[in-house]
Length: 132
Image 1 (tube, one colour):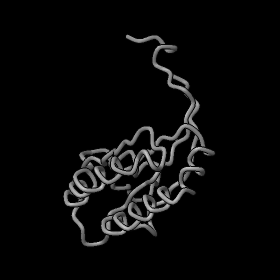
Image 2 (cartoon, helix red, strand yellow):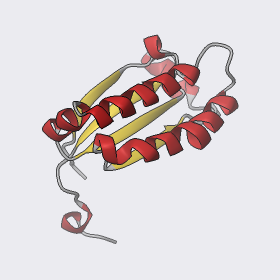
Image 3 (tube, helix red, strand yellow):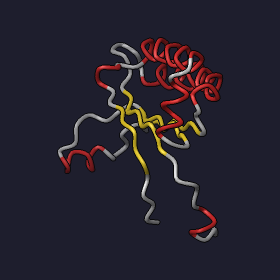
Image 4 (cartoon, helix red, strand yellow):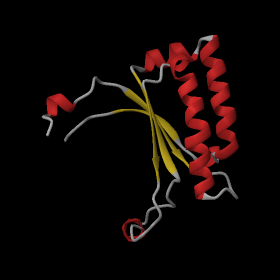
């Protein structure tokens, strides 16, 4: 097992995107499109945007976990969460302001509109504080 110091990464910021699929799209079609079409597009534009790491987390079928959400009065689950890791907010802004970065951002947003219900999918910039 790695010690805490061996596991820790350099401080980074993350763009967290809680995704809900477009109405009428099945959960499986959503995951397939996200993994097999959108992820390669993110990989293609990662350098232009300064993305250091990209992680997709998929919501599993309920299988009993709905009791946990129900006990807390939680809202409907997201279909997945995307994490895009950057070295800093300033690097993120600088790269996004270049011609190449703006074109990459437009391409990603255009694709996201094909499978994500953007109006119901919040996003924010975060920094981590690791406790364990």
